[in-house]
Amino acid sequence: MTDTEQFDEREQRAWFGFLTMQEDLRRHINRQLLEDSGLSLSDFSVLSALVQQPDGALRVFELVSLLRWERTRLIHQVSRMVSRELLERRPAAEDSRGSRVALTERGREAVRQATPLHLRDVRRTFFDAISPRQIDMLAALSEAVLDSIADQERNNQ
Amino acid sequence: MTDTEQFDEREQRAWFGFLTMQEDLRRHINRQLLEDSGLSLSDFSVLSALVQQPDGALRVFELVSLLRWERTRLIHQVSRMVSRELLERRPAAEDSRGSRVALTERGREAVRQATPLHLRDVRRTFFDAISPRQIDMLAALSEAVLDSIADQERNNQ
DNA sequence: AGGAGGTAGGTGATGTATCACCTTGAAGAC
DNA sequence: GTCTTCAAGGTGATACATCACCTACCTCCT
Image 1 (cartoon, chains in turn purple, red, brown, blue):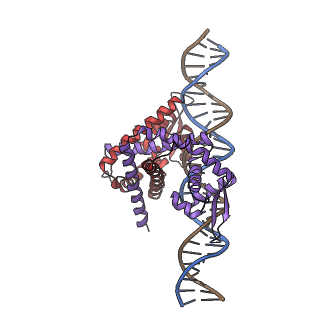
Image 2: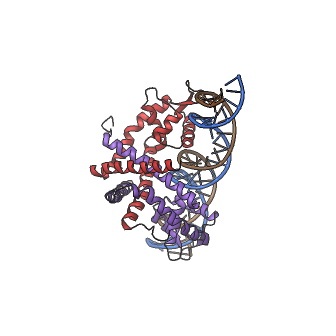
Image 3: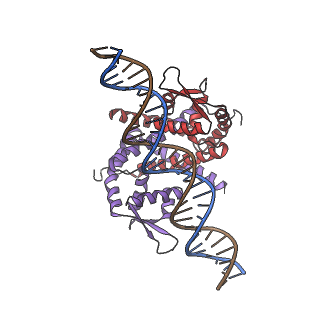
């Protein structure tokens, strides 16, 4: 509580480096994607989850758990995308509370066109900058941190 | 342009894992900090850059380059913090266009109280979940990616 | 049947990030 | 000196993220 809680040099470097990198990378990739195709990274995430479904549609709660987003965030995102005609909402047959989020033709076309450009951008700024060993380590690290967050949230009931 | 640009399994795992982890971690840490002390992570970054200065003040452009933020982002952030009386703006003596951003007593107190709690949270959800080797690797990786972004931005003039 | 409690989806307000555009003043060219 | 250029800071609009709160309806218990 006093200064027992300092970070050492290495930790500082890792934490501030990570924070900065993560923000810069997100901003950079988002900007490139937007220029390439008029889609934000959030748009792209939603579209690409849907395009992998046989019927190009998912229930809202399914999208939430696939993307690991906050529910409200997804709903607002979907609303904006509906108004841009990238998506549409359909009543869910199984449950009359629910709704399905479905790709429109326009949404399908947008993601089709954006995907290769986006992958190219990610490769150029991310994968080309790091080694195969770093790639695997990052994957492992990400999973460890996600588990740690999930643990803590479970303990907060 | 066709499917020469696919990611392989490892890359997919790394990229989607990283994207998710990065968002979850940011959200989680931000939420804890907000509960601990009423400060957002953005608030905290600004305050803690200032508290390290001898006079608790910096020019706007200095803050921008320390934090590596977009200029406008910082200016809006500062405006909100001024209205919450965490910061104040002072005219810059050296350059009558410029302004200095300075901690108020309240801002100084807020960061003093928040820091140990925040460091504890970061340790718990982040450092305790990963190994020392991973810490160093992440630092190296972050620097490599930041360099790669800087390169690309230099090439776009 | 009918009521309690939980699940699914949504809205509005507020805080945050980014873009296009603006004003003011510093600084070097002439 | 004055003109052009650019650095510094800022505003307003829009997209996005999160919180508190709401409604509808499904489920299951009795």
